[in-house]
Amino acid sequence: MQTLISLIAGLIFGYGLVLSGMSNPAKVMNFLDITGSFDPSLIFVMLGAVVTTFIGYRLVWRMERPFVSGEFQRPLKSEIDGRLIVGPILFGVGWGLIGLCPGPALASLTFGGVSALIFFIALIIGMMVSKLIVRFI
Picture 1 (cartoon, one colour):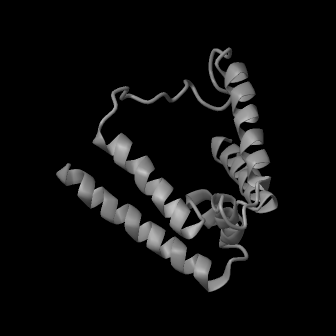
Picture 2 (tube, helix red, strand yellow; picture 1 turned 60 degrees about the vertical axis):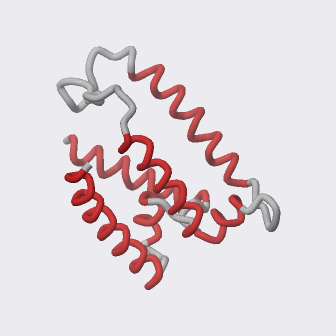
């Protein structure tokens, strides 16, 4: 049951990414280009995500336990370390350079052609390399 609900949630999330334009690198790049061909429409997408998350967390944390699990999964670490700082920096740089992040990249595999596939393969390779680097940190 948990797998089915996760699949449905993932499909809804992917559909939302495609519908909103977050899986279109050109649209993302235009959003990030504030001095050129700026497209502010993704602000509404992000605002909708923030409002939905805010309301969702307020409702969920009132529950004794999740619907399909025995307990809530919370992070074990609370301190800020190098990995927590470097990771978001690399994420932001990659998002700014390419116009895709992992979620939209996965969604774009359905229609993005060869360039989306190449990006996704590079993403997987980057994730494997990062696991090797983390061992030395």
